[in-house]
Image 1 (cartoon, rainbow, N blue to C red):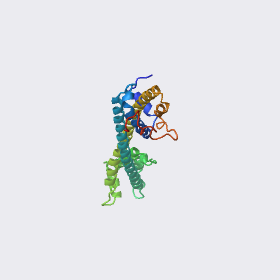
Image 2 (tube, rainbow, N blue to C red; image 1 turned 60 degrees about the vertical axis):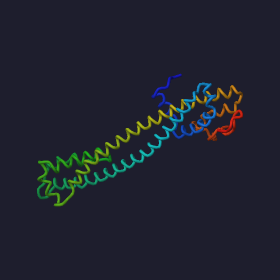
Image 3 (cartoon, rainbow, N blue to C red; image 1 turned 135 degrees about the horizontal axis):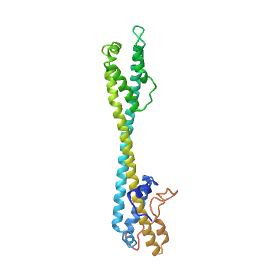
Image 4 (cartoon, rainbow, N blue to C red; image 1 turned 90 degrees about the vertical axis):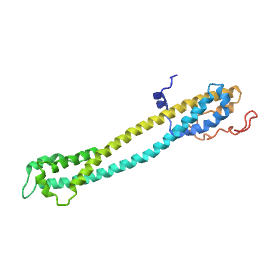
Length: 254
């Protein structure tokens, strides 16, 4: 038997879907509430039931916020894809100008042809790659060596360079947002797994105590109600224990 730690909680929690954990909690919560005093006599203190409910509420809140966050991440990634598309279009326009300048029928510039060669290979859809390509091409257009040659190739009023600068600034940011979003997703998942694992330990302890109590009472049916069927997605598992609404030993319904 291993003593629970955060890593152990995460390891256990990875086995289960949080929705199933929450469903299992809803089922056990009623049993624990009804049998609280008796469970305490079998190693499940009343305070543990309160703590279990608090952890379940924490899990539900984190799961909800993560679902909302996922929508934000998807929006950011959609913007990244748009920026990448704009960048690739800009690269095509800019390299067309560069190639025509290098191969000018009036004043060809073979040295320029050599300078632009690294920018003519196909570029994928990675934001950082596209952003780096745009930045490199901008340096050619604005650098002292080639700007006198290239300036006449850009019509007055053209927004080629301002648009390129905007794209170059946006793409590295989009890449950073993507990496941050992925890293945050990993953190969120670990936190969810930890809560799933902690609740599993609560469930296991409650089941032990519940079965012990009802077996001592020679009531095997109620002992068997303490189960983890919902957690393990057992087909036909009830969402509520059959005896929950039945008075126990003359006590009124809870």
